[in-house]
Amino acid sequence: MKHTAITLSVNGQEYALTVAPNRTLLDVLRDDLSLTGTKKGCDEGTCGACTVIIDGKLALGCMVLAIRCRGKTIETIEGLAQNGTLHPLQQAAIDKNAVQCGFCTPGWLLAAKVLLENHPHPSRGEVKTAIAGNLCRCTGYTKIEDAILAAADAEER
Image: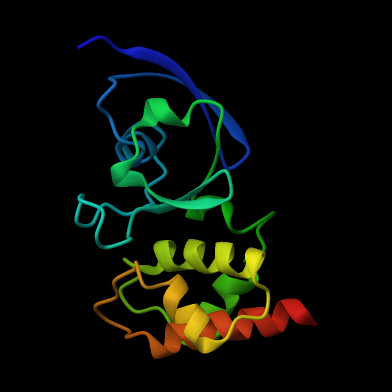
């Protein structure tokens, strides 16, 4: 299989890579760039553990080919905190005990980031809809919803 040279912009950093055309963004992030915060769950687009942000929109890393990401801006969970300071969503997740095993956490945090960027004052129903693609097997959703709503309130101040 012929490999293709690409440059990916991930969390504000450029990476020059050579990848097979059938490699997913998820596998390139984890295996080539060592960005393991994006989790490999179902590998078929149903659990949300591999959620990333591409050009401001949510995407499932396991369903996107890396070569399709040339010229796009990719954000992963590693890019959420800035200069050693947790993002308000990350702090709210801690404060509201919305994290247990942590496997789903990167996905719902990024889903919540996109929600709050587009709708800074969501209702609980809107939060539920925004994270509907992120399966959690430990915490349940109430604490996650509480954390997202608390982050929205914190950003308001």
